[in-house]
Length: 278
Image (cartoon, rainbow, N blue to C red):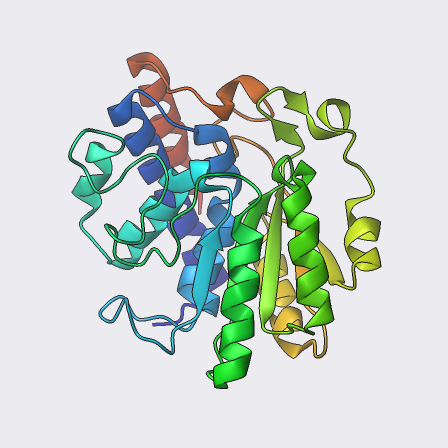
């Protein structure tokens, strides 16, 4: 069921963030910062935009999502659980031996996961292939690819971007989680990545810049992407790493570590407070 009420979507995004914290805390490992930053994006895609049915996770006519920044798997798992693909209690098994919810998404083990990801820079190539196949089959599927801004330092990203533009893949929508931090610090200082909008424009993409935590803006951008013909779209979503948990926000150190029990309790308390004020 498509949810159009913005306040309802905002509440779902908070629940998704709670699931992320639960998963990473239970695992005692993971990547909370980049998972929290893309929670609003994934919430809008799964609850408002994508043509999907949790009762038919393998429907050939469904829209697809490739989480190219696969280390943010806790966000994808939490959204899928919230959507009803599997029981939310399974989030507590995240990254544990024998669990299907491993550190990177596995399409063979988790219902709702459209592509196994992990090695950065490869997801866009897969998404391009999916979009091209949908065009060839006249299936009408929309393909979404969520990437990290540190990830676009990978050369394969730009090869895939050329292919997307050359083939006029207007059924491809890339969403860049632009939180400006990667494991070693700020993206412009680590890899010299700047002028992202101009770079993708030069590769033939329709570019849209938004606040990646504003639900209305995400919906509007996705709508514009669907209406754009003859070229792929990238939505450059300005986000905050660790969004929703005060002591994690804009801290590169939270790229890949789990909270202590005290930090876990504080994070859940803050997120529960956000629920109350919505």
